[in-house]
Length: 289
Image (cartoon, rainbow, N blue to C red):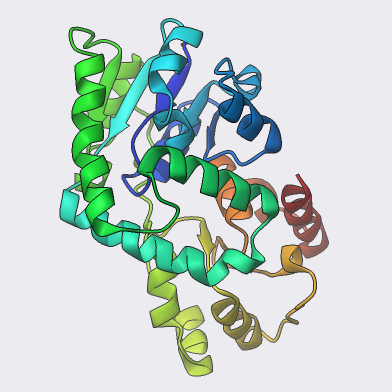
């Protein structure tokens, strides 16, 4: 298919899973872009986004914030609204903000600038506020459905967190279902890891018996990453954050959101076939963009 695809669900509604699933279907998709060009274009109201010259799909609140304008800038596009049980979404959003507060000082300026701008635009707040988030969610869903009223071929509503997968997505895009399982990604990994790996002994136990059916890339706190590296007798570089990662059991554990999202979207096959020096360079290249 040649049409652009926009995932316009709010954060924590399965957007990472959606982004990876689109990539698996051959639709080159970017999830939560934080580059300065995209930020500037959104700020000045230039909605024929430059990054869409490179990508066929865009997922997360950068698309949610301006979906009517994207609809006009890219005619004949497909829009996917991911939804979630409200209480579950509020709980996940609150935990996500706790994680953001924990890692904020270690994130790139581009991530901070985009997050503050886009969250203020969509939620009217740059911190979690349950009453405000509830209001925004209950207003946003009917806003989208009303906009696309009578255009059933242009809008798909998916509850990925509730189990929707290829059976809904592929017919909408007119693409055959792939043999691989739908990528249901555990979006609570950072929060869960901070409790699962609370001590050095926990890290050793975790590496011996890691959970099954998890995503390829985790973002974790500095303390968790240090414990994992210690358990593997690997050095922990406090100065070079792009070198802070663990490659274990077909998964990457990293402090960098950009690294995790990139790997989750592109897959680990290239990394897993390379030497550690090559992996380090790859991660550093992502962090430097």
